[in-house]
Image (cartoon, rainbow, N blue to C red; front, side, top):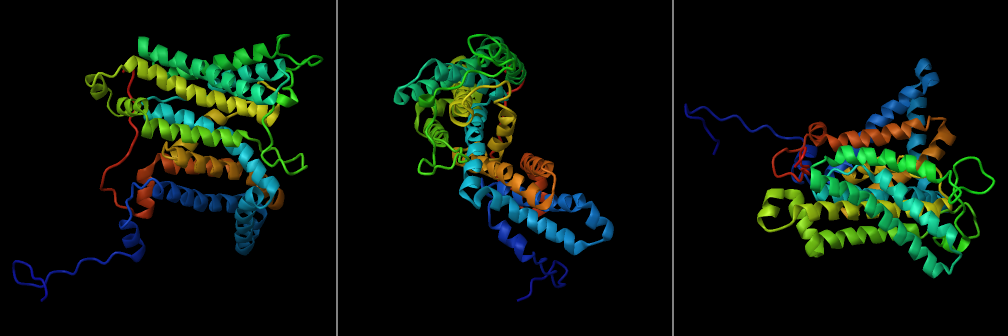
Length: 398
């Protein structure tokens, strides 16, 4: 029978949704995989338009086919340069390794209700501690390498712990204190690299003494004699850090308390948990992971310390953690994505003459769509009903 309204007239048939919308409606719009995936797709679509606009010559000639070819070549060169050869895979791993550890650093603090943007300073602290162990010892490697990594964890943890203590005892907001400790760590590193204890003999620029061969992390592709394959066991250390974070938050009592404190500080206090201790501990663990990232950069990738060995890793890691939804597995895959963009971007520039800055734009677009889930849902016409898993950070002095 046909449905009728109150006055007896036939009711209007419900509007039929497009099949694509129906498909997405069946998927939870807040799924940990769906929104990041759609954010990446959205960024690549917008990036294609940007690549087209940078091809000025073909744009003037109105050569649409040539522009589409450039876009196609660019998006083929990107994964090919990163994954199409052993050298590309090696460079992808080298780029992803510190991003994994720094991303875990941000995620540990974030899931504890803290906004830690001090990974750069914590990497400086960990890297300088590990390089000191690296050049003051000469083996055996089975002892020296773990000691250098442990030194990085402790130094980074202590540097992050300072922020935790300030937050717990004085209410100083971690955003401000981590920004300031980044500057302090950078300037302290510069000063140390100019001292006789650290500076490489015969050098005027701030470069540390070289880590001994026995103090270096073993090569990941040990069976190859190709010196360009720079990937090292730091990648395995980073994966170990991801496993540790999973165990901490999913299997340990301390992790349960950190999650509870991060979700609802008042409930944690009512349950008898100690906010000051948890705040300090969260920042110590986060700093230790970032310090480990700095250590792998020094005794794995570079072999010595410079004033810029941390680069922009600490800030890129925030985007990695957000893209990975602050989950260990997500962070590993997000770091790989950023590693692919970094390694593949060079080949893209070489083969298509597209500026390397386009890769930075793609990364920024991914962050934009991740940081604005409502925009992603609007573009892809996803449902907005349901529960969200948005991180909550405590306000000033909380």
